[in-house]
Image (cartoon, rainbow, N blue to C red; front, side, top):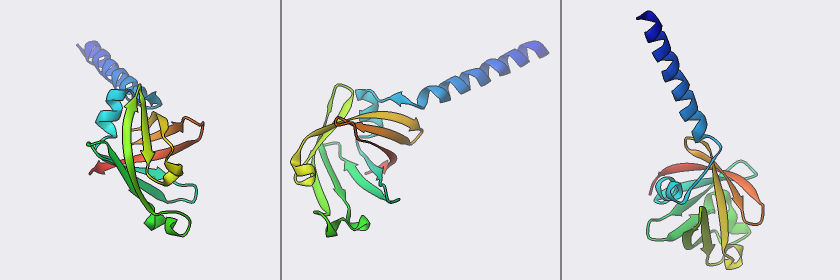
Length: 133
């Protein structure tokens, strides 16, 4: 009996570790993007330590504001556009940011509420998944 309890505990611990390990560094699927990103505020980490919020609304609109980061001195601080999913990538196009050019991102889960993004031009960064909007 004691051996079966020990084995059961070992199996449970191994399963817990494998499930936790599977969630880190896993590429997002289209379903994952719909479940984990859409309807949420996503905070992009900036090189100078702040966070830039983007809202991925369920109706296909994405909007953001860089006012808290002082973007108004360099560019239009607020913009909105649209998002869509192509394959397993999240795509977006803003009205004026990035000169209105469409771009797509591969997303890689790095933690329960964190991710790495890789833009179609090779640029990379990190983000934090916030609350529902």
